[in-house]
Image (cartoon, rainbow, N blue to C red):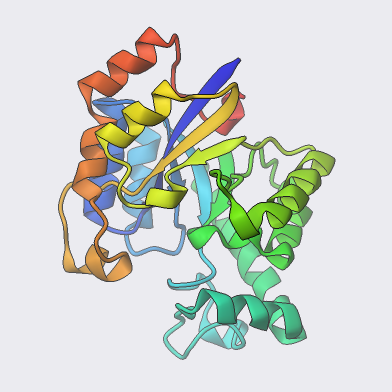
Length: 266
């Protein structure tokens, strides 16, 4: 049995991303979006999502390379005076592991983002993290601690073979998700070509689709902007939107007897 989820990340980052999510869903095959609750255009994203009852929306926890939800005074070990997280993923991971103050602040910020999502009134479809930082065992533990309280249906498994050095971490993550009773995908398409999940790549991946749950993840936008380029240099965001609204992609899904869903539909 094959199931596919088409997800757009960074929902709420800017108007161009929010517009692309709406277009990808209403004019294409996008089935889900991951909301950054502390992003500048989160309120606009929530308003759009409320108009799109079939769009599945999840929480895109942001703990690096972005802005925190809580004020700097409440989480001083995580952010600078402007409330901005570090862009250094490796250094952040080490800091969280060894600093009790960082873990305390991290737990507060993660809970705050969960509560902010709940306050939108949207049904929670899934949880993932910006830059897939839930691969970090400390972050995953904190997310799983909240999974039952916030009724988390699914969590993204960032696995796209060949996984190389990530294989042991992914095996541990699978085991922990199973033990927690949380659904997850088997494969993630786009990890090795993040920002470049074009029509050709989607069609190629669909032709090689394995049994189980495959999530395709995208970073679409209706236009390239300086903000988006600073956020992720070189991403082909308009190309990804074109893939989501592509007639050949929709036709290939139909030929395979597949309809894109969310984690709550697994």
